[in-house]
Length: 225
Image: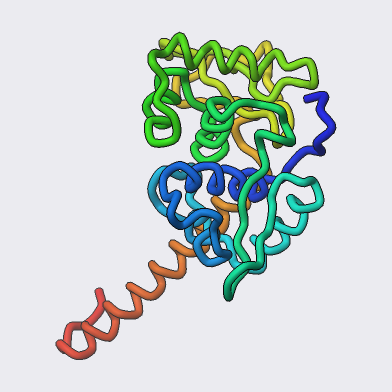
């Protein structure tokens, strides 16, 4: 991506995606407070992957994005609020921002999936309209912001991904495997960190459940097998 922007981290794109999403879905609450922004980053629905970012993590990201002019902070009222500045910085229309937001929040998707998932941000007339805006984003003179990925085995459509976190590493001569195999570019360092955090959380929950079961067995006089 030959643009003036540096490569953004996974959490930086998650924050931008949340701000662009909430601007359309909850306009009465926009710009967002830090608490609302953290909740949006960590929500369980419409996110891939699901993460557990802390307020401290998000504050660091906000400072970085503010330095790139990608967000604006307002201090009116009792708390600071944050808004994105994607259209002005990247020189793209709101339709393209909607597509980028969904790609940042949900990962690579087909044009059909993007049309459905963008419904609350912008209603595209048809898939051709989505493909037209994707093509514009891919062919920007200042550097492409999205790329069409090679079709996966067994898939009927190609998926698209954003390039704000860098270009994907695609193996051109990899042997054919099951349709569930993914390209290396689909997994970023941020996603790996998020997955590790989720694994740690699940392991802690399993340990807690085992301890609870142990206490229940002791109360009922049931010996562990």
